Image 1 (cartoon, rainbow, N blue to C red):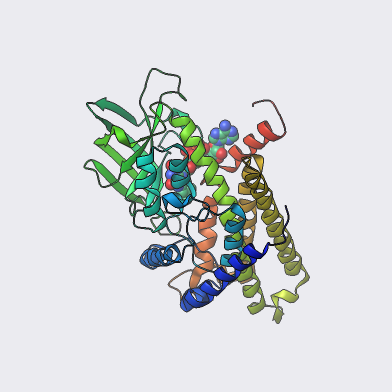
Image 2: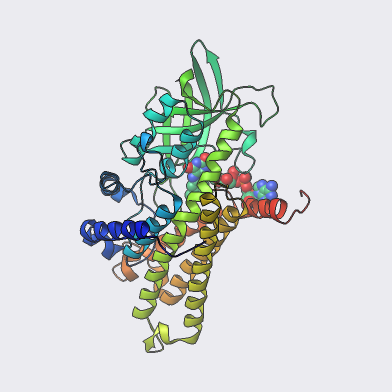
Length: 398
Ligand SMILES: Cc1cc2nc3c(=O)[nH]c(=O)nc-3n(C[C@H](O)[C@H](O)[C@H](O)COP(=O)(O)OP(=O)(O)OC[C@H]3O[C@@H](n4cnc5c(N)ncnc54)[C@H](O)[C@@H]3O)c2cc1C
């Protein structure tokens, strides 16, 4: 990949930079100085407004076709944008499941009507999306899912349960995988629906996490009617459509997460500078310096792995193993970073939000606990290793 920018790309970078300088909320960048940036419930309203502002400025959906609300640019501009976001330590995008997954999948598989109806409202954050894949007995083995949809007249009736559904309590729409043919082979009887979360019969029950927040939910369907027109990509073709969503999820991970990791690492370096170890700043301790330097190197490697995926996209190819490797690199990097944040704080690491002595108001304790989920969400580390083993190294299936 050629990292030198063309004059057009330079002017795009400058446009982003000056827009961020004018529009970035000051108090947010102060808060971003430390810790994690997983959207907390108390900032949802602020993040909706922030995303709308970025949309109005033309920075959401950079690579999406203009006809569907995007800007029709290349992944190079997306990469430039993400880099500027990281440097400015800007707030995260709230409707990330829509923009990272649902939107690109609809653009790839949708009817013209679906493509005109949904994507633009994802970008503007008017409609929030969640992902209804996992069930109590189907996570890694997703194809075994049991939620079923039966045809009645011109609609389908959905019954069953999803679990761990992030942001369902805020969502207007769900990417739903449901079984439409119970007799077919398990991968072949699944259909991908666009489900209106405000439909009668949908019940959302929040689940409390180790952090104390309820970021994800159980979702129950009790005779929920979904119009046939809300099938995406054809009846019983849900496995192919759903895998496309997961491919985009990993791509979004590659783009977005290296940016968030870089922001968190800057916060950690700042924490180390402010923390005293044996009477001197922790950044003078050789062990701490080694660990920080290693993290910086890992973050750069992660960035260039993402750039390899972008190179493939620019050539019109689809990234493959880079995506799984990227997910693992992020998990390991981020969990190690949060562990070092705890180590630096010594006994103070025991104090979280609510304690007047908690370091930085307990934000590091929150993000340390939240980071434990990284190796599960979006496909577990073991599953990523299986993919790398089978598809990259050519090992036999275990
Ligand atoms: C914070 C968070 C947010 C989430 N958000 C969503 C969401 O929005 N929508 C959604 O649909 N899901 C979501 N999930 C669910 C997530 O996708 C699943 O938890 C994940 O796929 C694992 O499934 P499981 O929990 O059923 O574990 P299981 O699949 O039961 O796995 C249990 C353990 O066995 C291991 N294992 C399983 N199969 C194999 C194998 N073949 N080889 C080796 N090891 C194996 C796993 O790695 C794991 O350690 C979220 C999860 C988290 C933690």
